[in-house]
Image 1 (cartoon, rainbow, N blue to C red):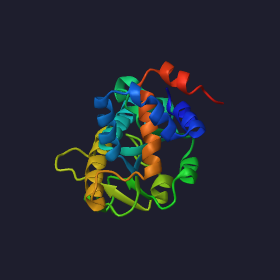
Image 2 (image 1 turned 90 degrees about the vertical axis):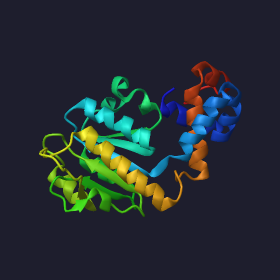
Image 3 (image 1 turned 120 degrees about the horizontal axis):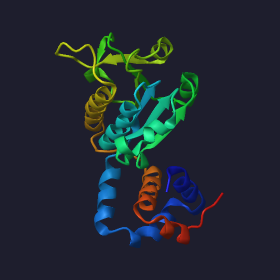
Image 4 (image 1 turned 90 degrees about the horizontal axis):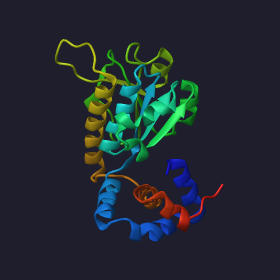
Length: 228
């Protein structure tokens, strides 16, 4: 079941009702794994990619973002389908929110207020390790060849770069995102003093999504018929 269908069912029946109804179909081992994952989810961390050149790189960002517990991956000026390439994401796109924006302007309009927008730039003065961890953040990466557009750079609250100690001028997009996400989420968790930051309502909704994705769709649809 895709995320949209899961969310429609949760909105109609209630997340707690779905969790209770599907519990017997989810093994104890699987339930324990879900709880461990949910405890480490960081709603306060997102990543965005502007006009990616290589779809495999963009899809690899989804895999890294899900692995470190980030909440959302945005793609700007490219098809959302590149974030859902199962051969590269290894199915992780089912467990994380992916959002498509036709233009940078659309992304900026939808960007959550109060969330710092930090752009990765090779000439930035701030280092990755200096990104603030006391506020929600979205890490913005640009095209593999051109980097972030001037408009995207201007929209960022701050710009950062990843230290390079070799002759390379830059990191591959997916590598840069993975390094940045790992470094930032590690420090964010230290600031929070816990692994994740989901509130009770978000936790129960995500639990319902996980249960629906963990059982055969026919079980879900028998117990909770689809709604328009």
